[in-house]
Image 1 (cartoon, rainbow, N blue to C red):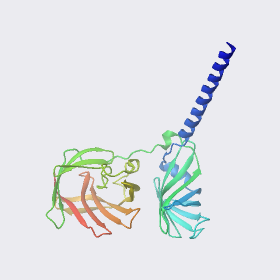
Image 2 (image 1 turned 180 degrees about the vertical axis):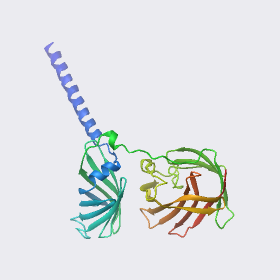
Image 3 (image 1 turned 45 degrees about the vertical axis):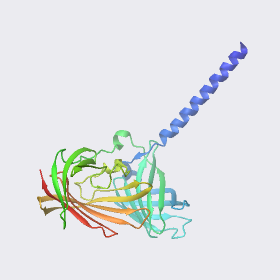
Length: 315
């Protein structure tokens, strides 16, 4: 009996230890769950000292520190990268929009970063780096813990044409046309048919963002506000191990005349660049809040692929 009691006691102790270990690692996992930082959180913690690493495309790791000062949407300060073969203490400048931070250093590097945070008040700036050397950067600092209700990012109202809306598109300078019928939408994601063929895009201003081929972070694209001048986002587009960075910005509001008529539009610029080649591209998308759809698109790229499509009629 004593032996059985002893064995049972040992079993209970082992169970207790395993449960405690499980809760310990669950706590770590929960604390390390990051979410997109709200605009209020970004304003509260962006100014100050950030520490982390730059990892180049060869896997080499360089410790780094950013000391930032923020005035409005402008960022100023200095970087310290002791092991860099370039300037080890370059000045920096940049801009912030919602949770997107773009920083350029005196030594010619550009950082396209996103701020995220977790429930313990750990804030992280992470993203891609281009310039004399390219790779990824991750910087962190501690800051104020916001409660869930005050830090929750609200998804903006999205204007998208009703399913069944019909348009005829034409390519400028050619006889090419496309009969478009708008399909269902989800967030900024859209679907449509073009001459009877099914089409889809996870982000309505990036017609290349077909979910069959590309991956993007829709939490970023769903926050884009097409009717606010200056609104901007950056996201990575991935396909078969290759990636591109897209930066989308609302440039201006104006009136344009196309074959379908005259419309007030927001002009939206999409700048794209390959992370593995020298390819770059630029599109101007003309978005009509009345039709709730793009009505004209102009595209150019570094390989001299240039085209313009516009709406000929809409019903």
